[in-house]
Length: 237
Ligand code: ADP
Ligand code: MG
View 1: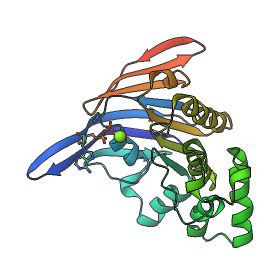
View 2: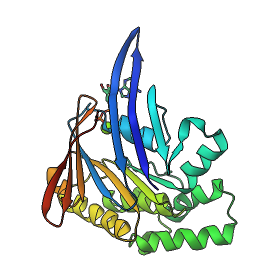
View 3: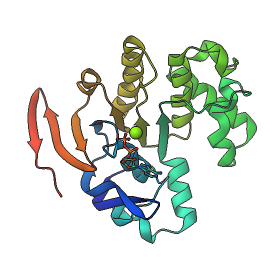
C-alpha cells in the first residue's frame, strides 16, 4: 500500500491553547520500504504513526492510502483498511493477560468474523513466523519481553496486512533483544511488507532502507540508502 501524507497537521487542545503535535508534514512511503522514524521525545513520531495507522485524524492536510483520500472514505472502509491492511505494534505489547499467546493472536481474526478452526490455523502460522511456536499456549506473563513483543508482532501480521507500523517496538527491551525484534521486522519486510518503525536507537536505524528524522513536529531530514550510498531527499514541507 502506498502511503502519502500531504501537509498533515495535528494539534491538541490543552486547556485553551493548541499544542502542535505535527506541523505540516508531507511524506510518501512506497510499498515495500523499510522506514525508520528517528527523533527526540515529543517530536511527533507517535502522532504521525497514529495518523498513518488510522487511529487518529489530522487537524489539516490529507492522508492518501493507495491514492484514496481517507477523509472521503466511510467508517466501514476505514475499519476494513485498519483491520486487514495495517498491523500495529507498540512498545508495551498490549497483550491480554488472561489469554494465551494463540488466543491473543487470534483476536483480530475474531473481529473479522473468521471461523474458529481457520482462526487457530492462521494464528499458529503467524506464531511460527515469529519463531514463538513453543510458547503458543502460555500466558503472556510467563514470556520474556522479547517473546511478548514477538507475540504482539504475530497478532499484527495474522490478518496478513501489507503495512506494519511499529512505534518504539524495542523501547522496553535490552539491545540484543531489540536487535532480534528488528530482525523479525526485517524478515517480514523482505516478504514484501512495508515496515515503518519508530526508534530512539541510531544503531537500529542502520537496518532501514530509509531514515526520516523528526524534530518539533516536522520532518527534518529524509535519507534513502541505496546500496550503501546515502541519498538525501529534500524534506518537503
Ligand atoms: P513522540 O512520539 O515523538 O515522543 P508525540 O507524537 O507523542 O511525540 O507528541 C508530539 C507532541 O504532541 C508533544 O508535544 C505531545 O505532548 C503532544 N501530544 C501528543 N499526543 C497528545 C494528546 N493526546 N494530547 C495532548 N498533547 C499531545
Ligand atoms: Mg512516541
